[in-house]
Length: 143
Figure 1 (cartoon, rainbow, N blue to C red):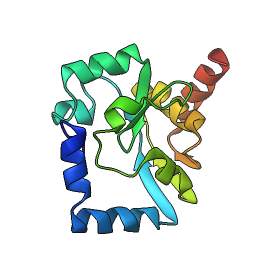
Figure 2 (figure 1 turned 120 degrees about the vertical axis):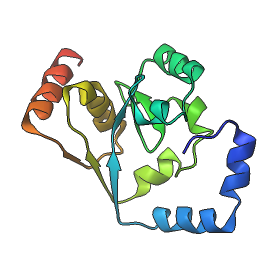
Figure 3 (figure 1 turned 120 degrees about the horizontal axis):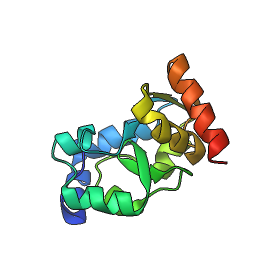
Figure 4 (figure 1 turned 90 degrees about the horizontal axis):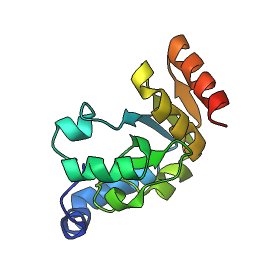
């Protein structure tokens, strides 16, 4: 997911099998993605992919969430630093997929969902009624 350096990322991305998988992903008509939030309970942090200094950087950048290891703020602006170490499609490649469906629920994900929607990468959001209402409230407050 996220490696320690751009050098390691380049080595992994140069592997034939990884290139094939990335090319298949680029050619997809539909992408189903999750929306992650930024805190000590996030999957990237608990799995050890993000270090304490990464969380500090993301907080300084006012990051609220991620899609496929692309971290962004409440306005949907991408925080590029960590993205340079992520084994994933580029944000532009993800955005080029004709239909990106995101799935996320829970009050803790409301800022992350709003930022994801504002990023322009998400075409369809699947969530529950309470979370959707929270996103709408935050959007009205934060517009």
